[in-house]
Image (cartoon, rainbow, N blue to C red; front, side):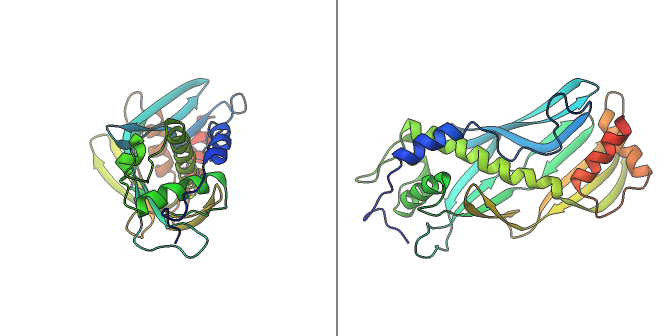
Length: 278
């Protein structure tokens, strides 16, 4: 375990390089087509557009989109809590203490498809001499490990010899977290349909329960374990809501009536809906 009392990692080079790359898209959902390549596309995998600090709390905002017959529909989500904490178990020599990064549940409705996810937790092992984001998270982990609260770190307020992050470092951290979360969210397209429950209440036709993981990933040079924060799979529940204007909800209900099979991935479901849109 690395102690800040003996060594605080220099971030100047890493911050500068990470700032140059943090604006690049990472892990965008494959279901969302590039402009001009497909007439219809659906992205039910949430994409984080920003992570910001609000009243000392990290929050994420993002969108899900659909392009139907040349018209784009966008559904935003805002103020989803993002928490960073130091895990109880420490990493071995040469790597930083393990960090826990949690994204709160996401709920959105896109043209009659109501999508809800469980909390999404990333248990991260950051390497001191690894990729750029790893070096940055190592420094955050070391500051947390030596008693500096996250609120102080994000506010740039140090305690004694422990410095908080500067404004430039915070911006780089926020961009890096957004890229890391998008890298994890992109895996939701591989979530597997495990249950279809007919509810027959109001205009709701059915609930699809998809499960993903837990997964052991390598993202941006970090070792990341993805789960639902209780060592179980991340789940995605999709409810089809029928009615006027609910194009995708109506199509999903039609698809279910046509015999959607268990074991289908979310990407496969989206592909079948896109086929009905042709």
